[in-house]
Each structure stands twice: as C-alpha cells, then as structure tokens.
Picture 1 (cartoon, rainbow, N blue to C red):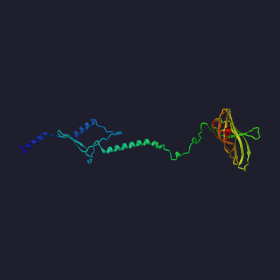
Picture 2: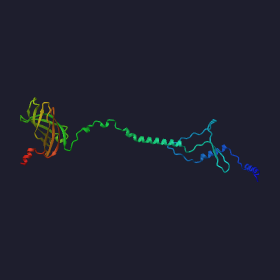
Picture 3: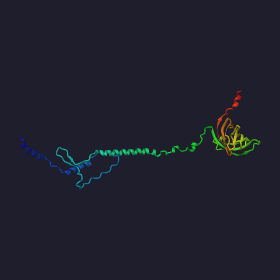
Picture 4: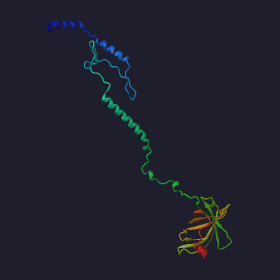
Length: 279
C-alpha cells in the first residue's frame, strides 16, 4: 500500500479520534475552585500578613491578559497560556534581607544607647573634690581640735599667769575637758621683732583624769603671730601610762589649733638624760 492509499485512511482515523475541546472558561473555574479547597504551603514572614485585594476584571483593552489553562489532548498535560507569578523572587529576597538588617541594627542601637546617655559631661571628671574628700582622715590614735580662751584665773603667785581655755570641736573626747594655761613671760618690746617670750604649760582636766603638758617656750611676734610648738602631755588618772604628742599652733585673738597622737608609754628621753644614764 502506497502513500496515496494510506492518506485517506489516516485522515479518517484522525477525525474519529479527535476530541472536541471543552469550554475554556469552565475549565479555569474548575481549577480555581480546586485551588481554594486545596491546602497551600505558607511563606515565612516576620510581620503580620495583610489580605490581598481581589482582582477586578478590567474593561481596558490595554490591560495585561490574565493567564488561562488550555485543556490538552488525551495523554498530554494541560498548558497554561499567559504570564504567571513565581514563588521565588530575587527582589523580594533582597527586600526581606534589608528589612532584617535594619531591624537588627535598631535592636543593637537600643541596647547600646543607655550607656551613651549616662556619659560624663566634659570636664566633670576633673570636678572639685567634695567636702568628704577634703576632710582629714585620722588614724586610730590621732586627734584634732582647737582651744579658745574663756577668761583669766588667779594663781596666787604674781609672776604666774593663768588663763582658762575651752576645747572646741575636739575629735577625741579624752581631750574635751577644761584647759588651763599657766605661763611666765618676758616682754621684749615691739622694736626687736618679738613682743613676748612665754614659758608655759597646759593642763587639761575632766572627770576621768588629766593631761599635763611639759613646759616649753613660745615666741609672740610683733605682728601678733606666734611660734608653734610640739608638746608632750603626760596622762594621769584614767589616762595614766599614755602620752599625747601634739602640735599646738597659736592663732591671733586667743586661740590654739591642736593636732596630735596618743602613744603608749613615755616619749624618748632627752639626749642629756640618755648620756647621764650611761655614765
């Protein structure tokens, strides 16, 4: 059988097996209905998802044609005609990455910002010290205070003058009693640069005992200032066995500033006494 004889039979067979295509609109509606009831795989998104607006058919002849599903012949896969949207989009990935980076940067800035708000103002680190820093730090046996004159007392001896002093702001209560200053003096006049030379000694007394100062010399100058002296005050009564070594500085208008320490026992012997003891 040649080709001319086979051609009519092939055309008859093709006509008998040809399937008339279904209605395209009905096919698309069937597929869309199945998509609504078929579970779909969701996308990860850190923020709430907003509902998408329903597509409204446009009467504009220039509008982009919507994709449609064309039925295929028996044994073949249906073909979708038109432009469709894919699940993977590089632009969306870049947008999501930029959003995540911005969100992480804001969290980092919020964690570090409080430290910058509490930064020290310029020059604050070199501010003047407080009163607590300026205060004198005293040792265990150290004491400070001041003495101010209260009035004169009689000694019964014409050459010995006695003045009563009161303790002011004394850090150690063992020295808060009454201080009597006994002294003799020599007047030097104003032209020689000094006014008086005193040979004096303090004695403090209270209900517990007393502190007796060993006599020492003090110069009063023409400008009303006086020499300071380092004195040893020997304890008596409850203070026996102790010695207070203190610096007494005269302040004009009858005041003394005192700063000293309390030691156990007596002060070291004078050189002449040490030499005499060896002979």
